[in-house]
Image: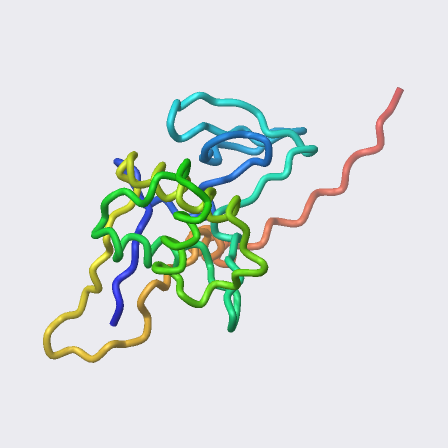
Length: 186
């Protein structure tokens, strides 16, 4: 079984869906809250909070894929491959020569589509990986297997967060019928 890279912060697990890229803005952002007209985000490097309005193109890193010859590869899988290649260390500098970046990326993902993936895309992947690596948000997740127990196939499943509330609502007794209201007198 292959191990994968987890994205963590000091107190809890950070998943790729909470890490955002905003067009026209440098770096990566963490989702904080949803406002009425905008999203509240925090830049990972500076910890500065700002608003991302509806006119901004906001993409979760979980949604981003890279074209390959066979099928699109999720960015998380690309990060896994980079992590393995560099043993958890930093990747190539994103400001490197485009030819050097392409050579590096073809070592990491040999089957990437060279016609559809541009050097600017490779720069972003290298930059994003280095940001996450510098902030220690990349931690190698070793598979947990107990000796003598077969794999149950439940790895990665979570209990729904709202389950207890739903059970409490289901067990709630029906409300008593309302008493007819007395007509108001003047």
